[in-house]
Image (cartoon, rainbow, N blue to C red):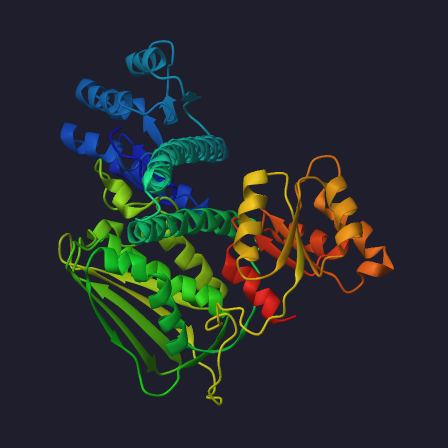
Length: 524
């Protein structure tokens, strides 16, 4: 059978009776039993069409079948899918001599023979049993369909995983290549080439920021999937959010020499949310627009208060989105461009993060595009809250300088000697007195001699880990005022909780940058 109609459309019984009176009586008897039934068509082609749609069961009297009708009936039942076996109930006066019974017994596997004369109860019972069997067949069909869909979903997921890993490797190599080249160039530059060394260092910093953002996005995807993302909600002006997002996505916008138009209202647009995460949302949309817009393209950011919503629209005149991808672009690892240069579009997690993070804020995001090559617009909506006096939002505008911070004794603990030495070099340049330890045991020994004001300690130390170092220092009254900063490659809530329980005051995720440390020092 070519088609697979829905079950509620196929529970009718097709009836072939020798006379119209027999047909009408049988239909009425089945109706009283709650069974819908219709006459089995007479024409060959009409019967074939009917058997492809009305296939609950067939009730037929052999006296109603001539050779042509029998051929049509068997032909219609011969093309069933593997899950289907339409039940047929045959009413016959002499099953031993009936040619119809002989042919059906030879051709069909789901045949019930009833000898005439048959009681009404027996006929109705046979039909109901046939329909129950048919329903079980549809259950099997539904299970097979669900199994096929699950298998296809697994194949699709496996394909997306392979594509993601290939693209991720490409994305990681992109910034690593200039960083390695930059290090080689710095090693060969003469001391007099200060300006060129500065340019190389700035290039390496840009590439490192790309690496850090990619890793942060991957960690965010994992934390959201595990339900471990917690928002630090506060009243925040969306104008400040957009300004912070423009700053963070500036390198991507500048790299493409895009014409940027920003349209913000004069009055604040207040929402309740996590300012850092909201900035990440808008920044991901801006970075996405920059990636999918050719150099020199136009990008527009508009903020409006529309009714009870704060609405941000990020538009571009870039690659556009085909209609069938407008919803899929928010799926994890989804990419519109699947050509060999698809890495320009990233690894397919930025827009997924946007959707998940905006949902956590009680908002929504949508995509619009006239089609490929015609640009796109992404719109986010968040509930507005009552106006409040303007004030700075935590985490959006903080100084990077350490002016005014007193000279501190600082101990850096990390078994990765390169990481420890470079952090000491960076902080020491700010005038702090620095010491280094490469193990937990060494950290405890040096701390008792050096009496540091601040300890930056890696958690994943061999043998004596960072948690143990912190708890032992906290158990010593002479370190009661020492500021302990945990450093870890893990940023999960569980790791941060364990760090607090061990006695750490702050937690930083690797790679640690100067701005993060300075923000802590400013609070001392």
